[in-house]
Amino acid sequence: MKVYQLYRYVLLALLIGSCAEKKKEIPLQEYQQWHTITLDFEGPQTSEKATVNPFLDYRLQVEFKHAGSDLTVRGFYAADGDAAETSADSGNVWRVRFTPDQVGEWTYTAQLKKGDSIALTEEVGMGEPVEITNASGAFLVVASDKKAPDFRANGRLITSNGYFRFKDSGDYWLKGGADSPENLLAYSDFDGTYRMQISTSEGEAKTNDTIHAYAPHVGDWKEGDPTWQNGKGKGLIGALNYLSSKGMNAVYFLSMNILGDGKDVWPYADPDDFTRFDVSKLAQWEIVFQHMQSKGLLLHMVLQETENETMLDGGDTGAMRQLYLRELMARFGHHLALKFNLGEENGPADFTPIAQNDAQRKAMTTFLNDIDPYNHPILLHTHSHEPARSDVLDSIVGFKALDGLSLQVDKREGATEVVETWKKRAKETGHDWMITMDEIGMWHTGAVPDSVTPEHDTLRRYVLWGTLLSGAAGVEWYYGARNKYNDLNTEDWRTTDRLWELTHHAMNFFENHLPYWEMEPEHSLINSKDAYCFRKPGTVYAVYLPDSKEYRIDLSSVQGEFTVQWFDPLQGGELQTGSVKKIQGGAKAALGLPPGSEKQDWVVLVKVVQ
Image 1 (cartoon, rainbow, N blue to C red):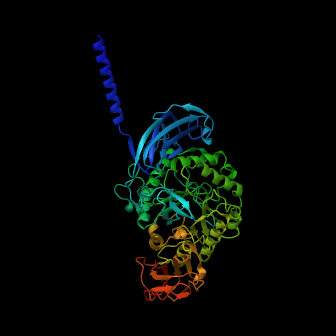
Image 2: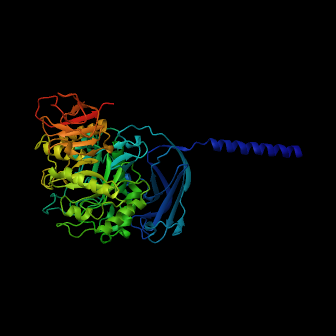
Image 3: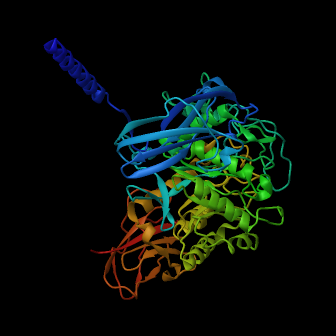
């Protein structure tokens, strides 16, 4: 008997050991670094219209842990988990999206709680725990297999030294793209999207009752690109493909324009109820946003307009504004290339006297920082001229929670001075600002179609090269309100095909030839008030010359020998050799003549000989 019992114990031990070995052999689910991980949890059955509000009275928090990281990320109500396809407004699925920045093993713990307005607080002890499936687990993150321009190749964009920089690689990144249409998301293929009111007001683009279809870009959709509901989305996805194909990497759009110009974009299930969100519409937005990231397009999310900046909580960061910002962060904050814009033309002006004040915009900025686990850039869109612009900026320059300005300028000839002024003002406070040149005026004109101005001479000179060589971190192009294709009705980005090309030429020059994040403007080094000079003293100088005449550069304060090469801003391409190949420091030196007889502008690259 004893031998038999011993045999049983040994056999049982072997079985237990075998099971343990098999358990150890079960591999962890693998995901890739910088790719979005979507985790679903089954919880209580509810709906967008339920008495207990799933957006306000529930709170899903998921803690993600790694040897080198510990992040708590908000989740959200996802209806049936497939709402982009089904248009469902009810279900029992709760979801979190997370983008891991480190390889290796991660664990997570999820907790869903229920309570009156619990979504507005982070208090751990508040609320009643609600049972959910899949409440804890682990997964393995391996290296990404993507290549640029897909942002999943390089990771998350942050701000550094007044520019965009990839957090992990340290590489800097320059922005170029579309500022129009601002109501990009007023798209007929999105659920619950329509125009509330036709715009006929002076000072804004006119509208009719038709929202975007982007029909001219349907042909730019490619096999394998995303769609929803049996082929919806091809027009917008195609438009984004086109913009990316032109080398652009950013798109400006409003996430809410209730009371604003278009009156056709909002995240809510009902534009009169700010406590309930349209799950299927936002799921469709997410399909588009994911595609944008794969095509290398930064999400420039503008959170409000000057006409509606006091609509939520009278401008305060109260319950409704907090809920709005939390919902956007939970659903879209995982994206790698996303910058938040506090609002179009934020602050009072003659045409919009009822506006957020300094304390309110600072509170909103602080709150966004507090709820963002990823440290996305936060910028402030300005008014177009003085004193409306400086009346707002004087009181917020140096505020460390704000990363910089989304600049609007009415008169393009003065754009460089505005960039320089606010870069300098910010630096004097000890908090560098990133300034992106995002809306050029005048408001009624902006960028016009190629058919009107084929080479966009003044935009190319004063705005593109002028602002980039004055320290701007990028440009976006706005279509004026009185253009046939304006900021609200444009359907076809090909109308400015040449402008995208010219912008791409400038971006390539900066990315390939300049340590621009280490450079500062000093236009006075060139013997012309119409030229621009961007420099790292004694090392490299980038000079924009408005014509083909001979100019001089002042190198009196530096020593050494410098090469002189020319870049064609109209055709791009390789650097070329002009009439002078080398110059000496310690004096003023002639740059010589460009390598062609064409009467045009040129860019000169002057570099020290190592």
